[in-house]
Image (cartoon, rainbow, N blue to C red; front, side, top):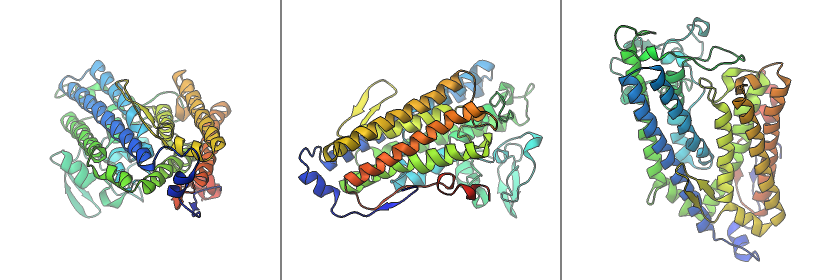
Length: 423
């Protein structure tokens, strides 16, 4: 296969597990481990988001270079557990429907706050492209009057998020907070991330950017909403939660969801939309954490999340470990050589992602790596794309070995129909 596909095979996973010579563990045990790791990952995401909220409160109360730096670091730390949960988005409709509230990207940041003149003032696709809610308590978008006099969670989530039906109007989640902490990255494929001054949060004299009180209100509301949304998802994976029930009450369907998540994130989302597309376009706007230049870490932890689910092992932020019966055990019982191959491919992908991280930590950010003319940087990113594709092929062989039915993997034009990218 070269893209997303559907496997409809005879038999079924339950039959395979019942008849394989070394068929352990039971499907319900594998599904339970998957749910346990999800619960732990979202709980860690919640805990680190609460730390971020505290750091934002300290910034708002006493804006300084130090409190801004601390809030930025808290945001970066919060991404570590969250990115490891992204493998749960695919195959779990409840997560996919929720995910847009916390991790939607890219965003037209002019909706939220002031932007550089190079950003422009209008867009044919988005009437709120440069609405600047922070500077404008009253807005008119598409003939609709919007009262933004009070900046709170209701305004962000109930009115501004996807305002006018435009997905780029991202008003909530990690990336809205990221923009408010870093500001625009105006460096293109040159060195440097966003450089918002701490004085953008100074109340009264010394305020830069204007409307510092409303900017503080927006940042506070956005972080509080992020915490609330993550708490909701952590509860959904806890005992008695709806997301846990969806994968544990029908374990065979749960295992299909597991492989859907691993394969779709690996291929269409990460290798395609988040990496190959930006590499083809050489566009710094196509990096996931584009304001902070943290993309190298986000990609790494996405890949680690896939491996976590396959081997049934997650290291929590406090160092404790959640582990148990895993898809790896099922594949090894069915076809040991396929398991060994897949495990090797997962490790090769992590090594390729780590090479990107090392390069970024050495001073060349991800948006520089994908820049036009940077042959060495392009090659490092392409190597990771190739590794993700190779691991997806191994996942497809694992799916076949388990005789799973109706597995759809996400695709991407950047991988399946490259010519369409430039049309």
